[in-house]
Image 1 (cartoon, rainbow, N blue to C red):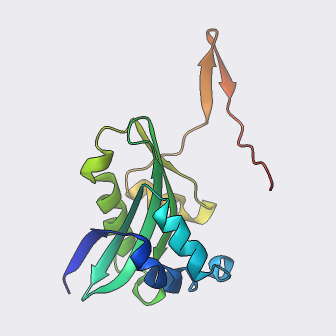
Image 2 (spheres, rainbow, N blue to C red):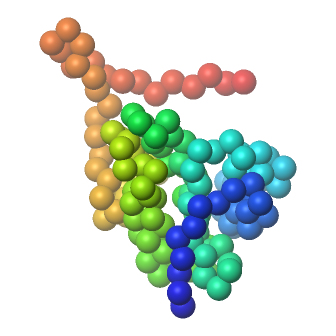
Length: 143
């Protein structure tokens, strides 16, 4: 089957929602919210086979300094077929991301080896301040 790497938009919300709903922790997502998210996501990438969306991910980026990959999904029936690696390659090879300093993502522990196989590496989030290293701490603001 021919697999095509495509950029996604709000018009693809229904298909992306179908993929989300294959994962229990994303099953409560609604069409209008996914459509809104895609409309405001600078880059969303998918894989299509015979016009069917079989994998997708969103990238939040300024196209200069940072890009962060979110919501990487492969259709349940196609997991293990190499589509995840193909999707990640389709993201990191996007010409629009070629000037970005850092492409990052967060994943659960069980996916570390997968993302390492895609070229990502674990890193300790630190920054050099006044000739010493300080840890960067993830913080959330709950709304």
